[in-house]
Image (cartoon, rainbow, N blue to C red; front, side, top):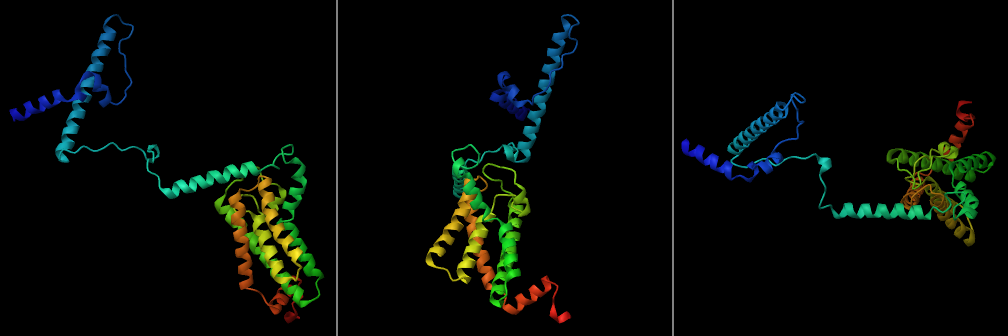
Length: 296
């Protein structure tokens, strides 16, 4: 036992952290309490003496705890644990770097392309035409126009196409609004949505509702209407320009418009796969106009 105590003392003396200049590294920061300040020359001395006694006591306690921990764990000291939010990831994955880089490029390009955002910006002369082009892809004109055409249609084939188009528009509207509520991504310029945006439930940026609707409507019309080649080219061009107009107005990112195009094509494919026949469409029209013949 005396030999072990002598070796412990020698080890403590040889430890660099036990030197006076390194003692503050082992002690937690504490508030110095000066006792008897202003009572003569004995006040500061008493404060220094109490502080030295506290440092010695804390040093002995930390030494005992370190010796006890090393004896219990086989001489291995526990590494200090830092909060997770204070740690820096020094080796990020390639996937994370690629995604962050693409998002940064997307935001930068979308802000640079927003030339028609301000009324007095560089794209101010084109702002009325771009706004009109974006309005042509809004949900309200297409829903109202489809209902008016359905009300004035007299042929079974025309009513069948219009009923399926109306269901496709409702499907596109509800799907895009639900995805926007889930993602809640703001636009590149973070403008508050207008009245027409609230009507169409187009309050967020991802995905672009106008781009999705334009692609879905253009594919629907091209598939079910007999059009000349120039009109078909204009219809494709209109769908692309509607998506670009939303980027020029600062409402959507480029990635929002691209995902909107893909979503519109998916909606068209889904509607074509569950196409409603003429009898089902006539039943839906009878229910909608309160003239269901089986109940008469």
